[in-house]
View 1: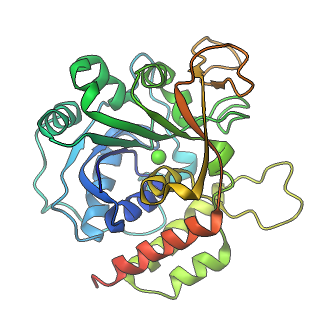
View 2: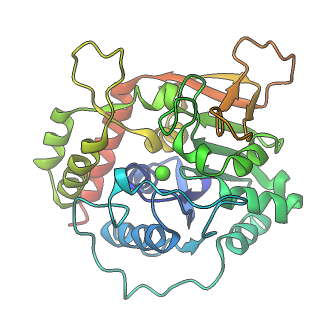
Length: 316
Ligand SMILES: [Ca+2]
């Protein structure tokens, strides 16, 4: 069982990843830390707390992370996730849950340094909080088992032609994580745009219980911003389940195809800013530092997502 800190910016697909984390037999979720990304820090923090209320797991603490990227101004994805950061349904009020006072950085440091077992960090927003942790407490690197993140792409981008959103928002933080020396697992667009949840899958959720129906509403909102790649030949393009890939890897690594390659982040102003430069032909001769995912068995991911939701329904 992996001991996990989940750094996220919920976010529709972060919410699906959280549902997987709560129900997985392989994941012991110790804490959530929130990143600014899909929406402002206040909103992603609020959304994480409300999701735990929906899941009846308010025993899991949520800690507020940095309000902006290391060096740059914050860019948000309200054009995807809406005004609240998770538009499409009404989540329960979290006002009765006591607020934590520790920062995300202090909380991550305390959990990792006090743990007998190594801790896994899953990150599905900009990597700001993780980078701050590694910069401020380099001595705890040896007690971090792995960093599993959603972001980047070997080929292409979604915020610019070359950059995926999470990496584009904080490329300096991403570079710190890539060069950390800790085992790093990357779930980029090469995989996550093939991770597709179809209309019939949303209909299955809509026919199920309370939590599943909430997710059907959320995914129907999320679907509005789903992009159709130029090479789609008229097939239904399912909703791209970006963040759930990173979490699903901990539940069942066999879902994904991974290759260890050298990855660095372009931080120069220009059309490749925020690009994850993946040395897939191994032309640099540099020692591979990141396990990069290049595909998945989609039906296994869809089954895991639905199974997690149906389990959560049993709480109602
Ligand atoms: Ca996210």
